Image (cartoon, rainbow, N blue to C red; front, top):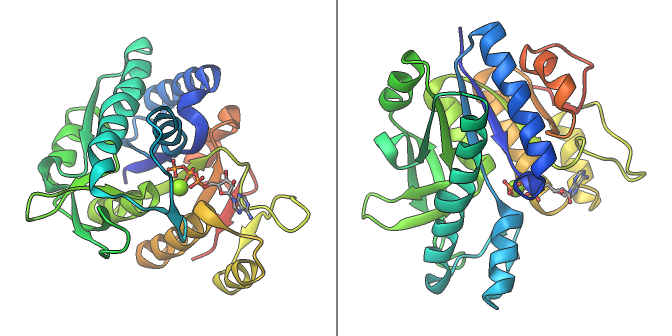
Length: 259
Ligand SMILES: Nc1ncnc2c1ncn2[C@@H]1O[C@H](COP(=O)(O)OP(=O)(O)OP(=O)(O)O)[C@@H](O)[C@H]1O
Ligand SMILES: [Mg+2]
């Protein structure tokens, strides 16, 4: 069975109730379907809160967090440290055997600096599947933060959607992107149930899809094209609907990005 990568992002880590509910569902799903699962996570809102506490500026360009030299340590601490460990804590409560990792572990996702302008922001590339497959075969749930390390040994902040797509290619896995919005919304803030690439480009040009959602939608099309099947963008808030979504059923919840 193909592994399923569940990418978690948005304000999930700040919502204790939703977080626990989600891991109850994941635990049941794991037991019922015995499907290899991998979690990749961001944690933008937790990083923002920390930056605020430390009075460090938050700058985003095209949905990507500009990461200057004096911020990378703090961002690594937040994503690979507290965010990752927080998710691990939830698996403990549900008795799920799990391992907390970052992209650099096992060279699972390779990372290269995107540009000087963005600072320590990495582009995610296909890596080595050996370590993750080893863990999946031993029935562990890998929980992977979007922190990577370049070949030169520089720590990098990677957008977690980019990271999830690179890992999906590495593992030839299915992918679901879960955020704090129900899916992609139109100009009237209504859910768009499915999107083709040309429709998405138009919504971006019209300023209806903005910020992190531009990155997410583009990542989803890249994954859909490479993997040859649709990708769903949905909300972790819709926990009770997720098992059907994980099983690939259509018309359940969220936006389907058509390959
Ligand atoms: N058309 C749109 N429909 C839905 N959300 C949109 C749209 N345009 C912009 N957004 C924003 O995109 C956000 C989701 O992307 P964001 O990068 O903030 O979260 P994430 O990718 O789930 O989490 P993280 O970046 O921490 O991994 C939504 O919370 C919403 O504010
Ligand atoms: Mg994002």
